[in-house]
Length: 132
Image (cartoon, rainbow, N blue to C red; front, side, top):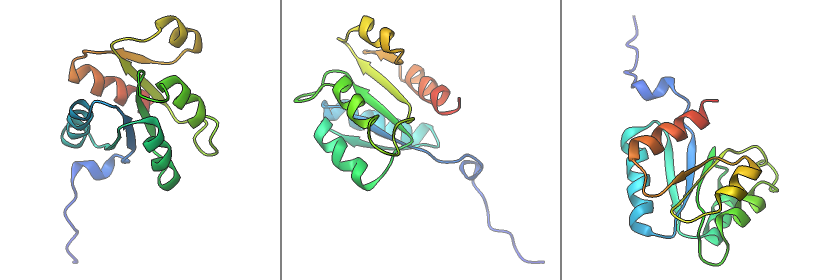
């Protein structure tokens, strides 16, 4: 009888990638590391909206985690561009920021988490969004 290769628990969960757009590199790298260590998701970081747009030319993420306040183009403007990009129209998003327009995000029915947030709350919220 042939030996069956060992499997890891992650193989039973479809891996999804998350593009994190965060201009504070320390926060961004912390979040990426947390996703790599604590979840089955692959996370990668873009420090601004323009780098995020470059990333999606090469890879289509399964979710966007967007800082609301970004230099040059805010997270909402980036969201609008991403969701008019072929193949990304239905890609889920979660906004994060210490200063944003709750009224605007509520009007658009976009999910958000306020900074500072508990890491467990962020991970749970992303998991909930990706498993809807």
